Length: 294
Ligand SMILES: [Zn+2]
Image 1 (spheres, protein in one colour):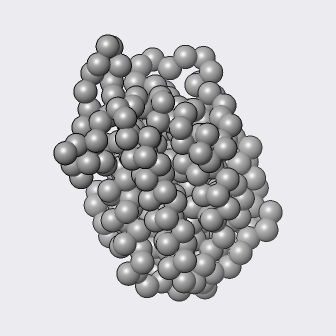
Image 2 (tube, rainbow, N blue to C red):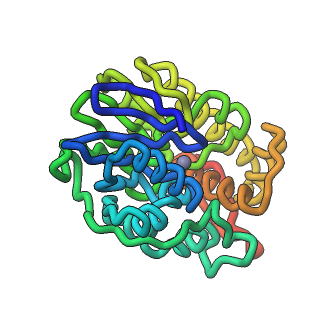
């Protein structure tokens, strides 16, 4: 397993999810753990090969691709896990993620490892920004993408920014990137644009020294979806018909899992338009429709 070095004590294990590695006093801290047992096993082997005990996994948020290795790593190494309170609830009760996406007990197709990690305990609740343990690592709230996601800054100035930004290739391919709160995600992008760090390491994009272009690509990505939602609402439209319109506009094909993720993202854009006073909901003939105001 190859790692990339970004500071005297900070590395990244690149993969589908980039995992952070920070060494303090001869012990290892990980930022996220990958999708499943297999990802956890690879991380455990890497650290065993170096004779470096794993002290703690800091989980940025509860999406399965970020916390799916936690259960294995806890069992194999006896490490502890840290996360914010709301993300901890889902890490410990992962059926809540497909439940949240479907808004009811999830059906069989949604009970897969991409939406539902193995349950694992959280030992340390991260309350607010700043250092949370003896490592000197610092939590940075990054609202928008999920319920209570954080980034992690290391004392050697590397900033793991989780899913606050995606690569331009992902934005191009999927168009609809997952978001729960569009306004908060845009504020987080503004915040990142004004932040200095030696390196920014997103979970799903290569590390960069200047985060400006990534922030811009992500802002444009959110805005073009919001504009497409607005376009479809020229006549009152349901969330499902808006998603169909966006899928057609950006030539998206979707699995059932991708459908519920995309449907949630459309919901986030609708809530944002409502908050900004541009669209309002009404129920007509048993269908929830979104209508332009004024
Ligand atoms: Zn992710």
